[in-house]
Each structure stands twice: as structure tokens, then as C-alpha cells.
Length: 456
Image 1 (cartoon, rainbow, N blue to C red):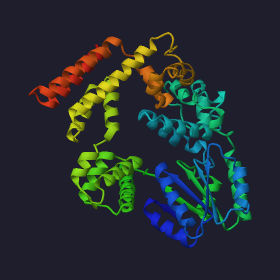
Image 2: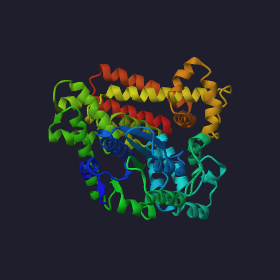
Image 3: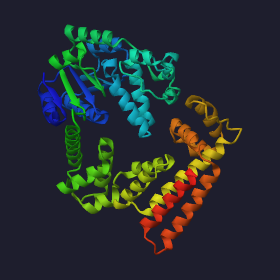
């Protein structure tokens, strides 16, 4: 069977409509895998009808899945068993790649993605994420290398356990022997399964050296939707091809068109974030209504260069005491039509949140300690905060780990600095609304003053 790549997905769907495989393995960029797997399922069910049975890979029992795959269903039509985040291909051979994914998610302040990657890392090393053996901070360099097959990162990894502290036994099934689970599936397929049953497996990384992967590649259908390549140039080319394909698919949903030059503008503003690309484009499509063509004015009105993430980059640079990066991001935001007042408003909201967290952290009744882990913070501090209606509204919609990190960040600031920042922001806002001085000058002066107040 051929191995399909992102540029051959239309061929995949055509082949699935004519002569489908029993098993489809998708691996690579998670959103694109999920999206394409959904399209495949629609094709498989289009003429025959049937049911999709979603299975969470974290909780999957491979033996049960294979038993269902072998059985004739009482339900009409085709039966598709779709396993998301399958653990069948995890091993320490790919642990380093998973670790890099975790580090990127952590740096981008995406706790859900980081937690998912960290669970995969532990399982690749045969560790259980919800028990004491997953205390990565206690692993020696030798133990780390033995578990994951690559050198210890050589820095304090205590923060990793904060992600794991929020897990419970409900988040995960016992860690299976992936080779044994793979053998069970291989045996099941060799014995034969009913023509009406299909299996879709989805993973972000796979160990291509496993027997199961090689068997699926030779006898079933494997779809590679990764954006990595051997060189930076090849990687960028691959990413662009994926995004262009996704953009064309999304435009076709509402029969919209857009000039090729505007495609480059949109991709430059969004970056390689497939989910963001689809969300931003659908937002623009909804705005245009019955008008078929999307214009530059539509993009300028609705899509910022890096949208909300860029404003988060600004606050991160401020907290990180990085003045050159701070000024660069501010300039870049203005170049892409984000008004200086919007930047000031973001900084003001950020400062207010830090000041609130700082004030709450200093209240004995809240019980916050800078040394506490995320799980303790959630059970003690957040529980007490949510007893009051105002704080329940303030913190109820946030991810617990995000609130935990904000308290820890606020702890590093003095109340005097945060109050000084609010004063500086108020003065800058008044100047932007009534001063003849250029907005760029006012903004850079503000950021320099805020940086100076923080660094002392």
C-alpha cells in the first residue's frame, strides 16, 4: 500500500471510496490528522451508512478494541473505530521528539498541549503519569537516559511535575506494553475482520521501526501529515504546502475566493498554526456574507499579524525583562494595524491580573505558598477563591494551571512596581488620546519606563 503525504490526501479519499483499507494510520500535526480522519470517515460512511466509535487513546484497552474489531456489530452499516492519541507506536526511540514538543508547548504557554505531550513522553518510557514513578525531577541523568533514550536536559525540571500534579487516575489507563498491544492488533488483522469494520489510528509521533508500523505501511494505509523535514528550507516548504492546502479546503466550504497575493498576507500573519488559520479564515468568510471574494480590507479589519498570541508575546517579554524584544514586538504590532491603545489596554489588563493575583497571594486565608505545586494550588487556593462569587467568575473559566502560573509570576513582582506600571499606563493612554507626539514614541517610552521600573 502507498504511504500518503499531505499533498496526496485527495487521492487517499478517492481510493477509500473505491477500495478502502481495513486500517488507516494518521500521524503528524494533530489538528490536520483529526480533520483528515473526519473526512475519511465521511467517505467511508457516505454510501453505506454506519457509526463512528470514538476511543480515547489514553484510556484505550487494546484487547477490547481488537475484540470489537473482530466482532460483527448489531448496528447497521459500517463500524469505524477511531482511536485518537493511540499509544501503539510510543517508544523511547521517539521520546526526544516528544520532549521537544512538550518544551515548545510549555514555552508557548499552552498547558493542555504540554500536558498531552508530557503524558506521551512518560508512556514512551514505560512510566505511569499518575503514580509516584513519574516524578521526573527525581530522576538522575542515568535513569533519564535509560527511560527516554536521550541525555537529561541538564536543567531544573521540577516545573514538569506541576503539569502531572493535575492528573488523576481517571486521566489515563495503565501503561501497556506497546509491543504486546501491537502484536495483538497484528494477530487480529491476520486472522481477518468483518468487511464492515474499520480502524482509524491517530498519533502525533510514531516509531517507524516497530513491526506494527511496517506491517501497516505494507498491508494497510499510512498517512504522514508531519511538517518536519531534514532542513529548515524543506521544513518551511512543507509547512507552506500544508497551509495552502488547508486554506483551499476551507475557502471551498463556502465557495469563497481570495487573490493569491492575499494568501501570502494571511499566512504571514497567522504563521504555522493550522487551527488558527482555519478559525481566522472562517471568521473572515462569515463576515463577508454573500460576497464571494475576500479582500485586503477584510483581512486588515479582522486578522492581526499574530492576533492575540502576539499580545501575549508582548506581556511575556515584559515579564522576562527583555527590552529589545519588547520594543520589537510593539513595533511589529503597530505595523500590522494593532492600535497603540489596544496594546496599552492589553498591558493594563495584564498588570491588573498580576496585581490581583499578588494581593490574593498575600492573603493568609488563601493559603498560597510559592513552593506549592499545581495540584495543591488547585485543591487549596482555587477551592477557597471559588467560594466567593466574584473570584469564581474571575478564575472559573481559566485552566487551573494558568491560574497557578499567574500566581507564581505575580509573586516575583513587588506591589510597588505593579502600581507604578498602572500609573505609567494611565499617563501613556492620556498622551495617546490628546498629545501631538507620535504614537510610536509614546509607546516606546512607556515600555522603556515599565522595564526600568521592574529592573530597578
